[in-house]
Length: 337
Image 1: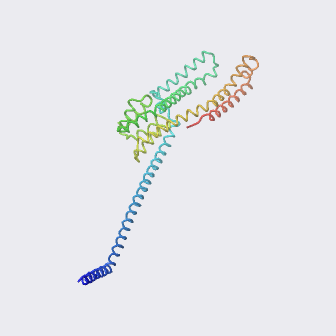
Image 2 (image 1 turned 135 degrees about the vertical axis):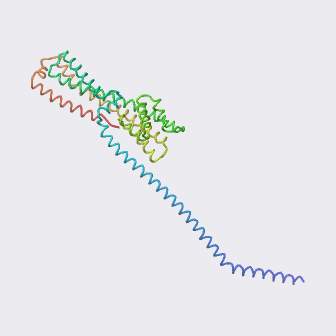
């Protein structure tokens, strides 16, 4: 009985194994096809993912290229505008020079003051005893030379005061923008709180906005009344940011750093060139000092230079050569940063 049961169990096991083998043989092809289909599906998914990644990367590159092209176009446009304005900034009309110097004087009144200055200077030298032949030249110098030199001096002094305070004003704008204050309100803050002449320049920007100009257009007009490269830099930064976007506080912070570095470089160059300037002053004053000492020690020896026609010719030629030498030395020791 036990042997019969073992035989039956063995038969059942063999039958089950046979059925399983037959089923596996019949389903093997289907299983392999499913595996291949799964592999193909996985490959297609990876390919789609790779295509999506490549497309996203390509889109980012295209967007960066479009933004770069937009910035380049903006820079070219700004450069063209700057060249056009530079023609009138280097030698601006007298009316613009008066505005840049901060003088609230009309052209007619300035000419009146110039004539009065020439007449007063001529009268003073006539009273002193200057020869009459020299008085017309004195009148021309007093009318056209000294007033314009005063305007140029006040203009340079105002630009220097502006450059001294301008980086601090930019830092205030950066902190205001970082704290959430709009740029227009930051500009109004500078126009109300900063010292002169920065306050006047930013007040002009606010007034230009009130008559309908946008902030970039108003800022781009700043170099017309403040003839310095730093004002142009500020206008370019605002113009590019308005067209291409970006982090305004970071851009203005970088501009402030650049302006401070330019100021440090100018001070360093001035310190390094002081020796050359002192040498130029000594060389320029040496002929006059020697002539004065010779006149004090032996006046009869040097007086023919002022009384004889040949002496006049020698003085004229010496003056020309001295002027050329002083001009060359000035060009050698003055550096533009």
